[in-house]
Length: 194
Image (cartoon, rainbow, N blue to C red; front, side, top):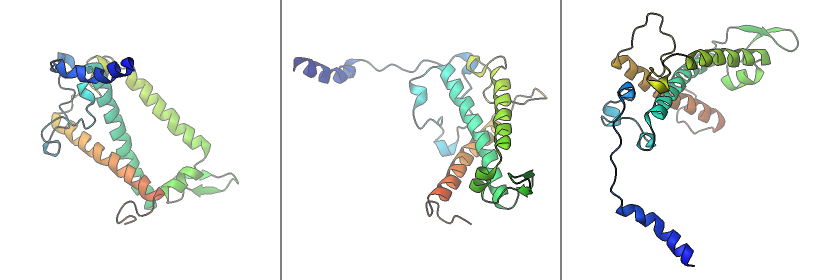
């Protein structure tokens, strides 16, 4: 019983410890989270889960790179979903019976009927891009620019361009999630299908 009482008091001990200020960001990663700050985030860094309060700069670089990658995938997925639903599935393939067909307009049905070879082509392409990105020097966890995948002219994107990409990407992540929610939970997204 004494052990339980002592263990119950342990969380209260933290009240007697002076709060520590977050450590200053290292120079190479100082501007890593500058993009995405705007009036919609109250002029503060967008960090609704509070990850930056208990992590180091290397992990923050990884988080920003992950956000950018997911944003780009979501923007492509949202565009692809809208294109597919509006009859944009123009690429023909041979089905199991050998007939030349196109994918259905419903994106979920298109995923179900896509031949395995097409799925593996997508995974292989993504794997090659990811491998190339992760081997760039300096790595984004060691002072490199997160999300800078293809830059043939070696031009550093402006803060305005980074803001636009992040904000559009965040919106696209919500957009593609709403498409899936509307597909699997009818009535969950008001006005869908439009």
